[in-house]
Image 1 (tube, chains in turn brown, cyan):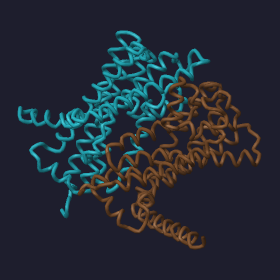
Image 2 (spheres, rainbow over the protein chains, first blue to last red; image 1 turned 120 degrees about the vertical axis):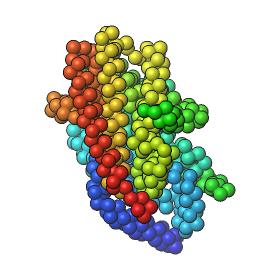
Image 3 (cartoon, helix red, strand yellow; image 1 turned 90 degrees about the vertical axis):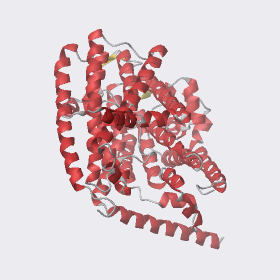
Image 4 (cartoon, rainbow over the protein chains, first blue to last red; image 1 turned 60 degrees about the vertical axis):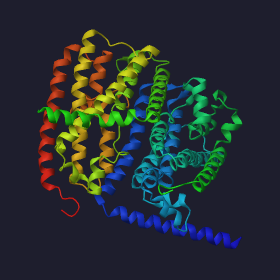
Length: 274
Length: 270
């Protein structure tokens, strides 16, 4: 047990060292570093601008008040910021596979998935996180909810769950990227879709679409279900309330499942040289 | 323009459509993504207007029509050359930009014809999308015949503007080693200030004032506002002149930058 713990601690130490080196490498291009951070802020600000303009113009949607919808926006943007910081490097796979450079990753003594996540430091994630934390804080403060320790714990697990579900979707696509590099277009689209429609109560869509956004492309688990539990909107969901309550655990399960899928696909990976 | 140049231009313009048409999977995926996007946008705006008749001068039908057309118009720009390794930044970083200057077709003309081909192909997609949406009943007709004409005129000038904005962004690559984030910020700014995310009519007064000082609103916001009848047709000459002024200014600027870029270019050791 102690050996395993040591190995785990050593792996994290190494990962942090590599992340530190990547961060310093990014700092070599200072103008690009600053604009990258601004980009992260700007990108997430688009969500906020759209959400705040729309929510201030309209009284709410789908039976949710503007402040309740804002809680979905806050949870999703923070989840996305954490996802961008830790997981969002699968886009590199397209070029790595096409160039045959993934083979070098296979030869190194570290998990390939981890190597990909550590390949570059995501400078724009700093901006993502800054905006995520800001809007999350704002949403929580105006939500009008009484924040008991249990609620705070559920809120935190909902945000982490959202991050894991986004990582699970990206990992599924990454598994496909190993064989079909053109899958990348879907990755960008899903991120765009989550950024746009993941911010609203999904009960505004017809039932088949809500089901698709729950069981096929599980955007509902990222912020909608946890926010519904916190704001007591579980009655109008397309799943039993227990499923919504268990959303963070389901997200964790989805992530673990997609990592197993990735491992299976990686074992079957054949590079450009056969 | 000589016949030979025109033939070379035509062959260059066909690159994007041909590479797309030879990949049925890519076309199917694109159609599915576009259809889902339109479908979701329609229900989003209908939900927002569930308890409101008119907001910012737009009724539900006008808002849904605007949003659907905005999705289709943004999609005309979605043909990324990144996968084909033919973006300026990729060529600059790998040094292959020098080949643009060795071909019989000048780099400016190559870039122009690639852009024309991409935008024409994108407009064909948008047109097909409009027909499908009209048949599905989610796209209202133009407010009047005059509004349709004003939309057509400002749309075409807006497409020219889009071309020059993309060109200027790419020309920046000759000065910056890494400019991915600047490109992304400009794309974001363009979407926000053009009214692609939401019609500018919903935004505060100060925001609309700022967007009036910039060229972006002429690419999407102004044409669509004519289409849905939010701007009277009488404003067409003034809006068209303003958009054309921006096109002329950006064309001159891009010409100067091309000239300077050619002088500056040093690839693969000079």
